[in-house]
Figure 1 (cartoon, rainbow, N blue to C red):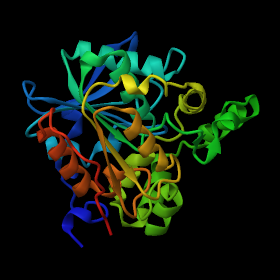
Figure 2 (cartoon, helix red, strand yellow):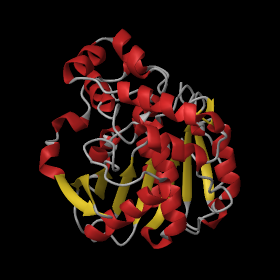
Figure 3 (cartoon, rainbow, N blue to C red):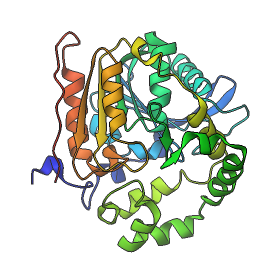
Amino acid sequence: MSSLDAYGSGVDPAWLGVDWSEHQSWVVADGTPVNVIDIGPKEAPVLLFIHGHSACWQHWLEQLPHFMETHRCVALDLPGFGRSPIDAPVSMERYARTVDAVCEELEIAAACVVGNSMGGFVAAELAISFPRRVERLVLVAAAGMSGKYIGLPTAVIAHPGGMMLGRVLFGLGGLTEAQKRLLSRRPRGRKLAIDFVCTRSELLHPALVQEILGGAGRPAGAPAAVDLATYDFRDRVPDIACPTLIVWGDRDLLVPTSCSEEYERAIPDARRVVYDGTGHLPMVERPARFNADLAAFLDEDPGEVRPSRASAAA
């Protein structure tokens, strides 16, 4: 097996050596304080990372140290997730406006925008509604093209009974720091905690799993799930005009891999990579492969014709 196809990042990931508090700040965007990590040379090309549902900026910990020498890397907590508070109705449109406002406040004219799951939905909406902001787009297991989410039909999620159940389930998702440490410490605990999004979560670094668990139980969980289920932008996806890389896992249980094909068909300048033996978090599960594919995409000539291909992983 190639080292690029290794599962996880091993016993000494680079992100553990970074004092992230030195790069954290608050940005008031669209009227809401947003927790932002901003690291790397300010004059460098910008990589903007958007996390998914029940997630937080730490889902990009395997990417930030890898690219921070050559790019200005910005990762944020969407309102109602991570440390960012929420004071307005949740919607994919509103999240796109918030990201645009964060860029405005940080004086980022345009960026390569990378989004996972719900964050991919938001990134695609940003590329449609604020095309000047998005030079390149990376959709990682992105929501928005499926009639199902977390294995449930979107009609069920949007039903009043489903919304009530969602409030209960997402409300229970919050864990104390002691509980997160306990779950992440042992392989069996890691499997129990995040096996529904990762295929081999017992192999992930315990500290990373603990950070990932920090995104659960936040107030935007239930309303964001409903908007994911009810907001339909599929007829607008062909308006995305920038080069687009689509990354998926072949064992994604939350957003079907078939959605990667739908995005590829809909976006004029897109290509797709699918990782074998990988779930809903390719950037966490296959960080070396993901970082290599992202770096290659960043280096490509925008006018180059790029055929679809698949990246194999054991």
